[in-house]
Each structure stands twice: as C-alpha cells, then as structure tokens.
Image (cartoon, rainbow, N blue to C red; front, side, top):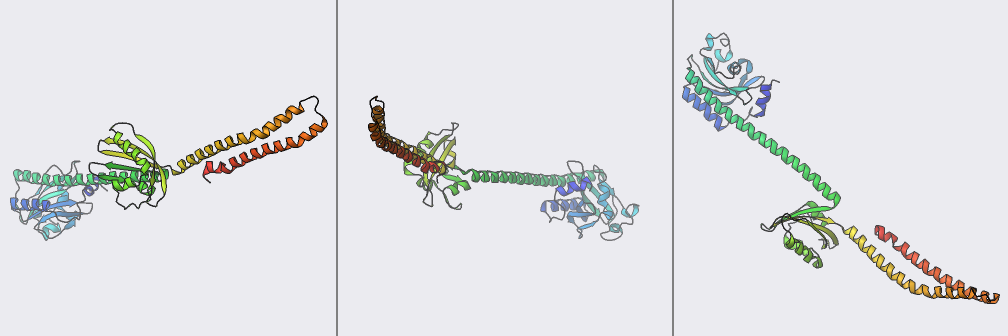
Length: 370
C-alpha cells in the first residue's frame, strides 16, 4: 500500500458522515467562483470519495475516472482543465461525456504536513471556462483551510490514542499493584481532611471484611479501631508534617465480621490536610509473638517453681553423699541409704520429665500456632 493511502487512513475521514465545517467550505467555493459543483475529494487506492459536496449526487467514483487523481500528482500546483472535451486525457472520460458533464475543472491538492496529497478541493463547471492565477491562489488558500482541519482532526485522534494507551498502561500498572497488595496482604489508603474524602484500595476492604461497594467515612473507620489504640493513631496523625519521615506502629481493629486483627499502620503526609498510608495485616505474626511471650512467661514461672521443688531431693542426695564419704560408713548404713537415694533421684527425674513435657507440648504453638 502506498504511503499516501496509509497516511490518509490515519485521519479516519473515509466514509464518515457530512460535517458542517467542510460543507461550508465547498459551499463558499461554489458561490465565490460561480460554479455549480464544488467537492472535497479524497483518493484511496481504488476510488475517489467525497467528504463534502455541492451540486453532485454521487458519493464516490472509480479512481480511473477521477480528475482529482491527476491533480494530486503535483501537490504544489492548482490543476486546471479549461475544456475536458478538448483535452486528450479526459475527452473520453465518462464524467465528461456523461453526468455530471465535467467540462471545466480546477483542483487544489490537500497536502499534509508530511507533503502527501490526500485529495483536492475542486470546483467544476458544465461548460468550458478560464481560471486566473488569482483564482487559483484563492482556491489554494481554501484548500489549506481544509487541510488545517484535517490536521487538527488527526492531532485529536493521536492525543486520544496516546491518552488511551497511557490509561491502559496505568490500568495495567494499577492491576499489578492490586495483585501485589493482595499477595502481600497490604492495603493502601488516602485521606483529604479538607475535602472530607477517603480512598481505600480493595485490599483495605478485604482486611476490614467490608464489601468494596460500601461507602467509607472517617467516623466509621475510627469506630473500627480498638479504643485502647485510637489515641496512638490520633497522636501519629497530629505529629505528621509534610516531608517528614513516615511513621509506623501497630494497632488493633474490630472487623465488620466481629473478629479482632492486628495491623501495622504506616503514615506519611504530603500536605497539612492530606494523609496517605498503608495497612499490613500482621495478625498471625502478632499472635505468634504473643504466644511466644506467654510461653516464655509460663516457662519462667515453671522453672521458678521447679527450682524450689528440686531443692529437697537435691539436698537429700547431697546429705547421702556426705554420709557415704565417711570412712567408717558400714555396709548396713549404705544399704539403708540406697532407698533414700533412689527416692530423691526419682523425684529429680520426675521434675525433669515435667519440664520436658511442657516444652514439647508448647513447641508447636510457638512455631505454628497449632
């Protein structure tokens, strides 16, 4: 396909409905030059199609018959045929020998910024006549006005395509962000206190167990924060200043389903009346930390209790050991001490088993919450 036709299609003009701005120009040309027919003609690879017309019923003709095809071969000139029946190129042309009986033709090419002629603005008479250089210049000026409107149309289309591409790119990036949020369990939000506007990402709604079509406002959001942690959030919000480092802290919330969750809030301010932030669901992590703290506390208590329990059998064993170290300990005495030694050792073994059972019982709770 020739480059000229490729560029013509960029304007999206072919087979479009009539438009007043082009109709006015052909009407002006017809009246000004006193000719019954005036056309804005566009040529693709096989036809000439009329974007605007005065004095002609047809909407297109084969390109082989088009006077305009000859005109676009010299984009910088006005193509004039004073008498078609006296011109070897057109004397057998059906458009000259039959309707609409084209005897006189003058066409100014419609030239793009790249220098390609897409068609012409032409005026036609059914009888021979002459066309002065001044008239040719006026026709070129009118043709330039048509081309200016073509270029404005293409620029609008390019802007729309660029905007659509940018929107599509943004939509894809946003979709990737939302997927990443869902995978990471992180929601993001934005508050404009001056406009009383709130934006929640879909992950925020999931974290709070709220349907995404539910309107959200500051009072409802505040009511879902644990009463004991609300002061921390208020203090952080009041301490934020534009350009300062972000602040992070952990708070509890009560979801719409009544469950309690731990969230790590991160706040940042880019304006005195605006606040942006993220919320990370750390419930599992926080519960594991609490279980670990409880385990350590219980273990400490148990060890303290065992230390007191162990003292008695340990003291008995030490006492027996002292007796056995005497030089005059009889065999009968040694045999009498054996049951006492066995009892003390049994008590120590029992306490050690009790401690091992506790550690084994709570090991899974510390590592997996099970």
